[in-house]
Image (cartoon, rainbow, N blue to C red):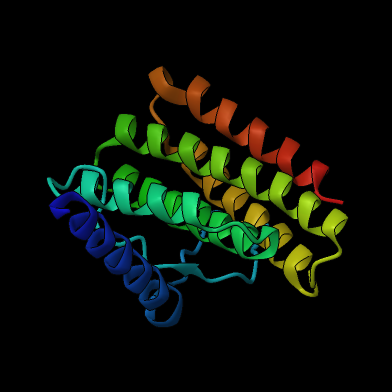
Length: 179
């Protein structure tokens, strides 16, 4: 009985946290300093605690529970876009904070979330869900991800350029798959 009550409390807290995250997430607009890069008018959400924080595993558990609980393809797509946006913002913050290896790992997770968002969007379209504006949001999110990865590529150390290039190539492939 205690396990059931504990699980119910965890689920309720998770639902509350995600609802709060969607409604109250402060935003950051990361800008690119390279004049050659094309600016994307898309504001990234504040990434919250970063992967180098001791409480980050709790955030990951919460995110996975929310991911598991959301069944509607439209809401799932919105959630996955949010997760991709937060991860790419965290990757930039980690890279700028002199933690390029952890930043790269986080950027690759952002790319994976973006891939899942594209798949979920296709399912939402097939299911006939209300996807008005969602395609544009998905495209702009992916373009912003590419913009940030291009900026990082100009500053990345030679040892990690191949990993950053891989993330950039995957993001470009993701953009081409949005239909």
